[in-house]
Image 1 (tube, rainbow, N blue to C red):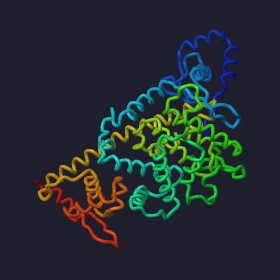
Image 2 (cartoon, rainbow, N blue to C red):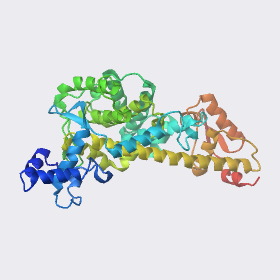
Image 3 (cartoon, rainbow, N blue to C red):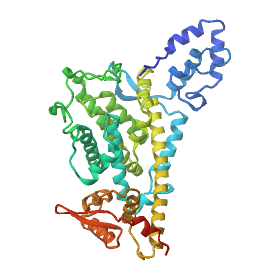
Image 4 (cartoon, rainbow, N blue to C red):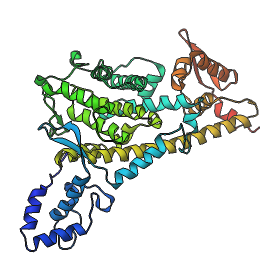
Length: 455
């Protein structure tokens, strides 16, 4: 990846401006233009800002001075320090406030309150089904961001069927799924270094060349740097000797015990993601750990909807923008606002995608329910789990189901899952047979014809 061009310093631009012809007057007039921190609603980095059309009579550098000073005026320092001991900062420009409003409106408060189409994830009969789907999606795409190559279909089947992983990529995904469930079980308990070690250990179990690297800090002799696929070094993490104290400080920040001023909880969750990735305290699993911590922090602050989102799916689509947001932060005065805006944009997109997904699934289940009611040979009601399986069976005539896979997919008890499948077999919607000692079910050969029959 091409490294961004670092901006000129405010001091250098100011000195040049003030010593020029009519410098003080031009300086005052420039600030009367009111460019603000995000001209045109965009919080641009110098790398792209320098190509923007300039104001008449002012250079790109002079405009950057006005913008940078507006940003500095609204910035607050963070307890996170860079490798030279300088604090990172964060600002709240208008675009960030707009995104935060959308997240507050759609992802918190009463369960489902204000979120159109939330019924499938607030209904006790379908909620666990969608939670399973979201955990699987995040486990797969978060691992794919770190190099896992298994397809979504194979990985999902592995988790549903409960079979052991057969490759390193499958192991990464299975670990990620289990770790996301573990983070969910943490609830509101405070973050500690021990919890961090247990999370990283869960994420990397069975995937490391040196298994002793699980659940501990990296060492100085392990020479960890962040580089792209061409070998260009993008980031030098802090020295390993600093990591114990840095993690203590990070946990204090995560728990809200070190702040003197209010920091929006969504911003705190995003900065926790950035912090872990910047410190890179482990030999492997840092990116997955960082994203898992984001989910923990959001849930702890009451953003219940995030359980059903996959931010990694969005980040995977725009991987370069995700990486650039880190690089922009480090190259421009440790301004984490670039990263915060990237993640807020991702979060809002994930909420919108979930809304569309739930609407689509709701329509599909209603269509299936209508077909079942109209079928001349089926004067029965199927529950939401059975309708979801029936929809899948119609699109996947070669699929096979077991009591265990149905149980995992819907987060229900073994007996409930067994009853669901046996009832569908009795109705002729599934064919039941044995493999070894276990019952297996597959779509009936005439399934679509049965459902097309008019009532």
